Each structure stands twice: as C-alpha cells, then as structure tokens.
Length: 239
Image (cartoon, rainbow, N blue to C red; front, side, top):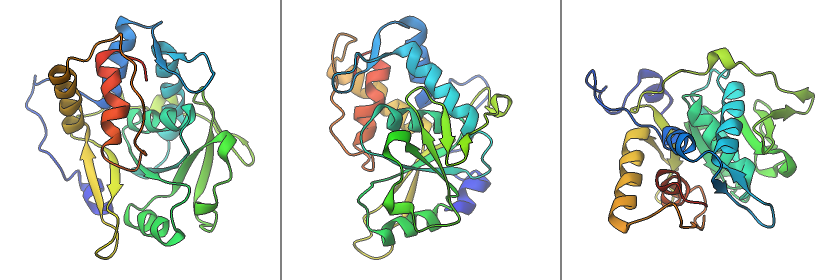
C-alpha cells in the first residue's frame, strides 16, 4: 500500500484542460457562494459557517503539509475537530486513515503498518487515545476546532508555504481498511475523483437543496460515511 501511494498508483492523470474536482474543493466552492451559511452544527453549539470551516481546514492543512508521510491517521469520536482533521489532511494533498477509539490494538497495529502511518491527529479534548498509546514511534497532535494543532510540548508550527496550490483529483483522499475477517485487514485507497462524482450524483438524483439538514449517522471508518460528510458540501446544506 505504501509503495502504491509513493508511486502514484491509481487513476491515470487527467488530460490537459479537463475539469478537476476534489472533496475539499466542494467545500471551498460552496464557501465562495454562501460564506455565512451554517456548515456544521454539533450539540448545543451555534455551529460554524462555511467560511469558518474552510479557514479551520486551511490552518490544519498548513501543519499537516510538512509531514513526509502520505497517510495521516485520525482517531476521534464525532466532533468538529474530527471533521476539521479530515478536511485538513486532504487539503494538504495527503490521505487520512480513520481509526475508531475502541478498535482492538491488533487492528490498529495492522493499519499503522499497512499504511506506514507516522502521524496521528486527535481532537484536542479527546487526548490521549488508548488505542495508539502503545506505539512509541508515532507523533500525535491534538486538533482544536479552529484547525490549530498542539502537542505534548506545546503548539505545532505551521508551514503554509508547503500547502499545495492544487491537489490533482487522482490523489488518494482516504484509506479505509477491510474488517480483516478473512485474514489481515487490507487497505483500500480512494481518490478524490470518484467520491466527488458520487457526491454530485447523490445531490442530483435525490434533489438535495441548500435548505436541508444532513445527519452524520455513519461511523467515519465506513465508506458510507463519505455520503454523510461530503454530500452536504456539494448541496450547500448543513450537517
């Protein structure tokens, strides 16, 4: 898996002039149209607008872009910072690999090894996470809702000059692992292009509009969660 990420294995590069779409690009496009529209709401909090979420995404990306690894692990319960972490990783041109806090250590170890993960993002108010505490070689950063990062020794420096101006749509956006019920869990690399097309198709076929509210009901380690997370951005709705 690591060699395939390094070699750029995946969909062929697009022809010159062909439209390029990315998952974070869906969010940016909606933020340009409706910057003050509520994008995310969790619990009793008033929520964050599209412009605020994009700003948090970019702050997180400025930190993540300096990491050499192609895949960044995320351990999180549902929260604003979970989504900001996911968006920050893909905006930095890298892929995220979601890990549930209650995963068995053996499954987490297989994922870390399979995707050559060296860094993890965790919502700052959910640290530490026991599932990754036994891996001394990992660097774990806490993520605040506004996209700033912290570590055990203080703030994490950002590198905004390293954030790519454009992320090709054949770039791997996320890596999901199979259950491992038939053996060792296997990683599946999913590029931006396919998920963007899926989001557009769902919006069109279901007649989704910007006045709707979407519920993030699926755990982020399952592929169905992509519909819950990224389709609202395409339709300018609230989730």
